[in-house]
Length: 312
Image 1 (tube, one colour):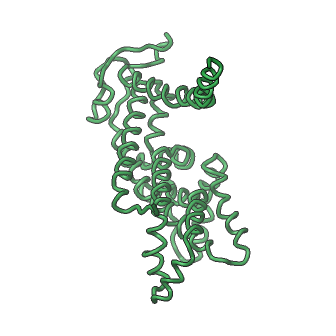
Image 2 (tube, rainbow, N blue to C red):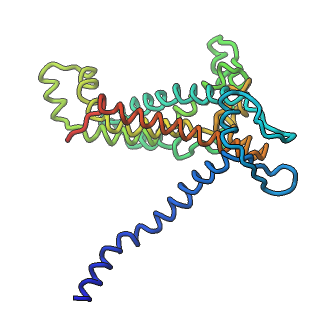
C-alpha cells in the first residue's frame, strides 16, 4: 500500500518537476524584471556621482513628472526633464495606429494571393517570408536608410517621373512613414499565419456560395473573413505589441527623427536608463508602456465577442 502511495505521489509531482524549468524562466526573466522595475519606478535610482547605485524613495514622483510635464522634485544636478514624454507617446501611437493595420492588410493581401494554386507559388511564399527572417537588424536599417537618403534609389526612381526629391529621413512628416513602410515590408510571419488560416477554410463553402450567385468579393467578406477572425485577433495582438516595442527602426534609421518624430517610448527608456543613468525614470516609462499595452490588449479581447467567430 505504501509503495502504491509513493508511486501515486511521484506521478502527481512529475508534471510539476517537468514544468520547473519553465517556472524558473518565467520567474527570472518575466516576473522579476517587472517587480524590480516597479520598485525602481518608486525610487530615484542613479549611477551618477561615482558612488555606485544609489536609491532614494520618491513615491509616485517619477510618474507625476512624466504625466504632467514637470521637473522631478528630488534634487540632483542632472535631473532629467520629462517634457518630451508626451511627444514620444504621440510618435509611438502614430506608429502603432498606422503601422499595425499596414502590416495586417499587406500580410492578408499577399496571403490571399498566395492561397491560389499558382505556378511556382512555393517560391513566392519563401521570397515573401525572407524579410521577416532578416528582421529589424542593423544591416536592414542601413539598407533602408540608404534607400531613402536624399540621393538614394527611391528619390532616383521618383525623379524619372518628374517628382522632386523628398527629404524622407529629415522631414517630421515623412520620417515616420518610412518606418511604417519598413514595418509593412516585414510581414512574412503574419502572412504565413494568415495563409495557414485561409487554407483551412473548407472549399465546399465557396462552392455553395458560387451556386447561390455570390461573387469573389462577397465570398471574401461573408465567408473568408468571418471564419479567420480568431487568427485575425491573434495577429492583431502580436503586431500591436511588436509596434509598441519598436526600437531599432527609430534608433538606427532616423536617430529619433527630426523634431522627435520617431523617438518611440523604447528609445526614451534607453536614453533615461543608459545615457542619463536614471533607472527610476526609465522604469516608470516602462511600466506606463506595459500598462498601455495591457489595456489595449484587454480592449481587443473584450471586444472580440462582437466580431470574432469561433467554429465551436
